Image (cartoon, rainbow, N blue to C red):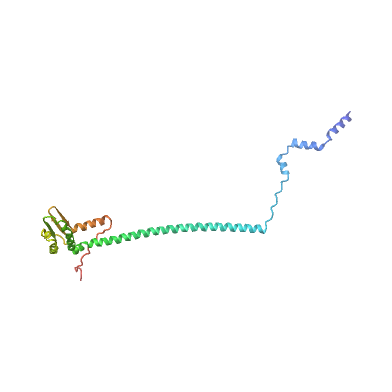
Length: 233
């Protein structure tokens, strides 16, 4: 009997020893799954084809083209900026020139009108009698229906006006009386039954100066100081 048991034990332990050992390793030692993956060989990467001279030439040409494009864009931006700066500068110069021209024109006009206003009293003194006579030549025929007309002028102008009246229609001349008054050479006062007319040189000059002053075209010009020999050696 013992011999029979021994024979069975031998039969039990001998068949498929390799499969049995593999099962012991899998169940008892529990080898990690990562270790199995590391043990597996990694797939090799595909080899890249070697660079050729044509590839190098194409890369150089692309780099040159990109640099040329960037340079052209930078040049265009610089040109645009420069043109904008020039346009702004020209606009500023134009505005400055317009302002300067306007200031010069206003200054010229102001100077001329100021000179005229300053010389107006002398003009009135010199040409006043002629203006008075021209005024009376137009006015007297208009008011000839009046019964009595009195004309008062500067003493120096009385004889000139009397001569002009004498050349009028006799009926009109007979109704005109010319007398002297405390007036300037360019002043005259005409009075009749239902009205009167006065030409006052001072009022005319003041009105002109006021109008120019409101427009900012008149500057007061002081008369130059008279030279004296008080401090002469």
